[in-house]
Length: 332
Image 1: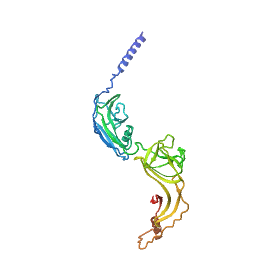
Image 2: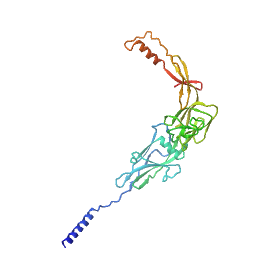
Image 3: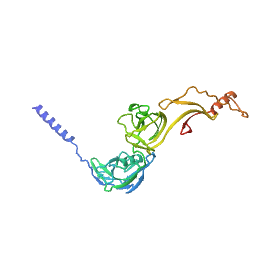
Image 4: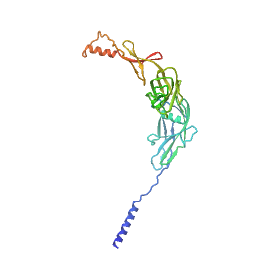
């Protein structure tokens, strides 16, 4: 009997303990009491994009929305082509501060990508529409106003390649794209190469793979596509330079010769022969240093006269490589 009474007491205490551990469940308040309003850019404002300028940017601003419970609001700017549906936008971009700030600072480079995604082609103007969506948890509330923005794209690609290769039967790597000739990147979107081309065809590619984006020079312009360029005649060495920021062929010239130039004598003292991979080599080229006269020169302290003459002679007799292109000497 005593054991039974003890059992009942323990059971009662357990029920009380469980009841006391229950927490009040509070519903999450997702309501946004007042949405913000767009501030800038102004409706139908025109922007001339300069994606090649790394510091060029555009700021989108709006007034902050107000949550009912004073919680956190997140923002994103949505874009669509003119006549499109902002409820199903072309692109969404979170605002500054990982979506916390009522502003978005976007580079001209990224704005050019948005323009391209909305159907605005290079070297043309077009309109896009935009607005801001405020959200709290699962509640998404677009602002009542949307605005139009006119964007002017320069010549060039919205997304320039990070690497560039020459591939095709006319190149040193042949048709095997995995052996494509890699060009040197001088800066963002700008590439150069010294290479030989033989009869055949070639293309530009952003990767040494079959799935690469393909490009081709068309006169002074660069276009995207798989159109091959035909090379005829004998094998020749060329210097090629492309700027994808403005879709332009900067240089495409034959390198007729490469020589060793001695400034002290004012002439070329030997020739180098092109091998492959942008390399030249020479046989033995005798270099006879010019002996300058040091009459009237006051030497105050060490080094000795012979040491000083030798050092100055070597320094004054600079040796430079030159290439003869388009029948001009160019110092490099």
